[in-house]
Each structure stands twice: as C-alpha cells, then as structure tokens.
Length: 489
Ligand code: UDP
Image (cartoon, rainbow, N blue to C red; front, side, top):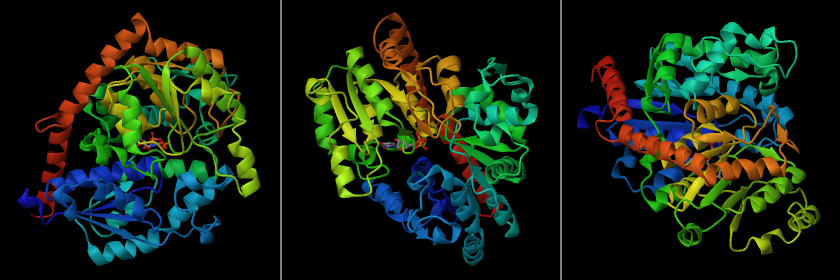
C-alpha cells in the first residue's frame, strides 16, 4: 500500500444520508489502500461523517481528512441550517436545495485550486464537478449512488422516451433496449422525467447530470458485477466511459460499533436492539424501514400497523415522523393516534417500533432478520442483498421504482407491495391486506424459501466480491493503479 501514499483524492458527497454514508465508506476503502482522502462536506454534515470514521478503529482512518465549506442555505432561499436533502421542510423547496448545491461550485473550485488533489470523486448531483475537475487538469469521477440497472433504465428512458407513446398514465410500456422486458407506467415517473424537455430547474438539472457522466473520467458504482453483470456492461457502453463496480461498500463495516453507527444517532441502544433480536428465531423477524427521506401520512402508517399485525410475523418497524413545531402539537402527536388502539400493548412480544433512526446494517445482518420491507433506496436495497434477505418492495420516489424491478423481476428476491405511483408523501395508497399478503409471501412458505435461498446466495457473492481477489476489490485496485500511474506516482 505504501506506493499509494502520495495519491490524494477529494471526495465530494451530495449532502443527504443516502450519499454521505456510502461516500464515507468509499473513502475508507481508498484510505485502507494507502490513499490520502479528503472528504469535503458542509459544517452540519461534518459530525456525521466524522462519527462514522471514529467508530471504526481502522488505523488507516488517519489517512482521511474532513473539511467543511459553508453551505449557502439562506442565500438559496432555504431555512438556516438546512444542509441535507432529508431535512428540507417542504418538498417545494427541493429546487432551492439544488440551487444551493450549484452555488457551492465557486468556493469548492477555490479549494480545489489550493490543494490540487490527484482526483475528484463527486456525487453525480453536482453536475458541475466534472467541469471543475477539468479546469484544474484533474480526473473527475462521478458517483451516482444507485444500481447499474437503474442507471441503464434512466439512460434508456432519456434516449427512447417510451412514455411519450402511451395514451394514458396507467398504460404500461416496455423500456426499450433494457434487457429483461421491464414494464413501467407513466405513474411511477416524476414530473421532471415525464417532461424532460421542459425548462424547470429539476428537468434541466437532470439533463446536466446525465450529460456530465459523458465528459467524466469515469463512473464509480456501489454494486458488484455478479449482481447485475449485463447491466454493468450495458451502462459502460451507454455512458462510453470506464465504470468501476467497487461495492457493496457497507460490507466494510465488520464489528457492532461500525454497523450500528451510520448516519444519525440511533434512537435505540444497540445492545437493547441486539438483545431483542437474539431472543427471536433465525429468519423470523421482518425489518421495516423506508430510508432517510420517505414520508407517510398517519392513516397510511395505521394501515402498515394493521398489515403487520395481521401477518402474524415478528417485526422491527422504523417510524420516521417529522417533529412537530410546538410542544402542544408534539404532545398530541405522542398520544400515538396514528397507531391502532392498543397496538403496542398487543405487539409487546412480537414487534419493536423504533421512532427515528435505526442501526439498519446491524439489524439486517443479524441472523434473526429474515425479511425487509424497503422503499428500494439503493443503499438499503444493497444492504438487504448483502445481508441475504428477501424483500417486500415499496418504492416511493427517486429511482426506487427501477430498483424494485431489479429486486422482484431480475433477481427474483422480492415481491412488490403494489405501490403504483411516484409520490412526495405516501398516503393511503397501499391497503393493509396487500401489506399482509406481501409480508407472508416473503416470510413463509415455499416461495419464501426459494427467494431466501437466492438472496443468501447473492449475499455470499457480495461478500466474495469485496474480499481480496474479489471483483470489487480488484476493480478498486485497478482504479487506484490507474490514478497512480496517471499522476506519476
Ligand atoms: N439508514 C439507517 N437507519 C435508518 C434509516 C436509514 O441507518 O433508520 C441508512 C441506511 O442503512 C442506508 C441509508 O441510511 O445506508 C439510506 O439510504 P437509501 O439509499 O436506502 O435511501 P434514502 O434515504 O437515500 O432514500
């Protein structure tokens, strides 16, 4: 590793948990190979990144430096202190958030000029990062934080626009040139994809993001080739650049402390959580969590509670609700009217509700966990794959509807709950009967067993890919080698 000691890489993660967490893991993987890594983030995201690093005792973490540059929240029309995408108070402010990230370009370039690293690895939502790297003659690599499958799906949608040829929003169309006969409807697409020729901030931003990959030095994908080889090859062809599949990066986390301390402070003590899990039989607990951003109405939450109860399965349910503005409202809220009457008492033995943030990787990796209800955010999906658990897919927004197809149709390790529409807030879209049915399908019976066996096999393949000599490990070595010879080191 010593020959990499002079190689210095800048990491610029997009400010949201789904990007900060894998980028920090990625920087740790480079650091473990002797690379000097600088993670550039914003003041309020810095503690989150540094906590992940501190909780791991790897000596190579001393190769990592974290710096913060001011995030122009107020200047972009956001409330003060709104520095990650999951803390935006209203969805209508999303364009402002992207404006703030655009405004980071100038201060970031000043920083780049001062330090002149050997490479920049930037979150793909910073569509200007490739140009910034170019300005200083540095190779700029993009990190999308999603699957090759969904990158291919997005690219084929952009190229062929099949949604323009259907007459109603519920008429299915096949994504052209994407292997697997993947069918979608217009309902699962966001406005900025449906009208991708319009001039709204989001549609323009999306075009720029996709174009910047074509000008980049290449693209890093947090996935492994064995999971989606044909899509990995296709994406490389579509983008016309090198791609490196170096994941699942979360597998870097081996001990309890590392697995438990990712992102926000967990709302449950990790030992209590483990004690609860250890009292359950292997593969008997369903883990229910929808990532860091998805919002549900109270009536939809009630429906989930009733579906879980009816399924008869053990469960850990992570409920993310926005804190109320004042104490009185909060007290009302705490009366738990969003739960069916007596729910928690009845579920005392079977269910654990975590209000807030869960130690997700710790829970998924526990042998008691045997299923995962997920919104199909890529990190969660890949963490589920790595843990070898079958999934109930409940996509909400972003590229999650693509990932659902990968899980249910291509990998065949999950069943869809039946979410049919891209939404900002999930309200009354899925009934308790559908939840109960999907949960039973992944937890009990012949079909569940087949899915579980396939999932476990993929979990082993994921671990092999990350071990020395595995495909992801070799891809990372090759990338470092290429950057080293480029910078003359
Ligand atoms: N996560 C967690 N605890 C929670 C919710 C989420 O540790 O209670 C982590 C999860 O393990 C994953 C990330 O946050 O690494 C969420 O990323 P994902 O891409 O799944 O979804 P997003 O939040 O971006 O929609």
